[in-house]
Image (cartoon, rainbow, N blue to C red; front, side):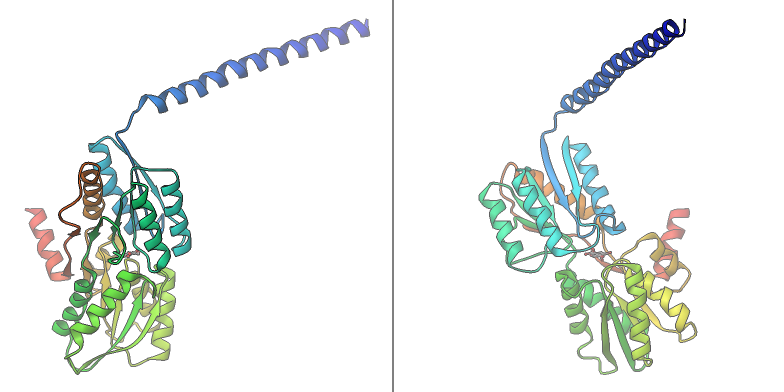
Length: 329
Ligand code: BGC
């Protein structure tokens, strides 16, 4: 009796196992099959890669958005990649990998050093055009640069300080990265613009590593070591936000003049609240869009214009108010 019910139980369990195994195979195959079909059904004309300085950085996400828009309009597959945290070696490894997988074109931030130039050459030799976006490496064989005139952007910082401050100014600068070519160009532009102004002097520079936390820490140490600082400048997108965070904690009543970079939403809110005095506007979405357009053109012919400059300007609260009034009408 016991033996036969145990036999029955085993038979039942065995059948259940076989039924679920068959189900798993059938449905598993179906899912797999559908996915494969969906992927192969969409045929793209080109496969481009966009290599960013830092994959989740808000500013680079705007470049990606512009690039994506062009990709969608022109049936292009866009692969957006970049290091988790800004790191030249990792960026260059990604660039090398994109050359190895033979994408049709690579849009990348330009970085300092020999290896970038060698990779641009390697790409060119294999028929893979490389375009720099946001930061150029003029000396490389990249096919074009799309982005801000960074020297001029630095000059604009200087002009804003000259026009809006009075008397002696000790300037503290938070730079995104010391080895960022665009950051160096912005510094040169700033220095050139204030060279003739005796009342203005850059007293110290610190690095933020293009993070808000880094910018706050850089500001703490600048203000501690140089308590006579009267103007603070940030040269990359999250620097202004970090500067305000630190200033409001350790020097809230000093009335520092603060110039930021870019118009991320938080920077605009700080400008609106008069906690930042001016910011330098770049157009990252436009850069992404124009870089993709240039890359698509390169699939047909060489470019006549190899420096495609997007606009740059100073934004102050007064202009922001005017713009908002215009929007309300
Ligand atoms: C710069 C980028 C940088 C970003 C960092 C921008 O101002 O143009 O090179 O990656 O700031 O947040």
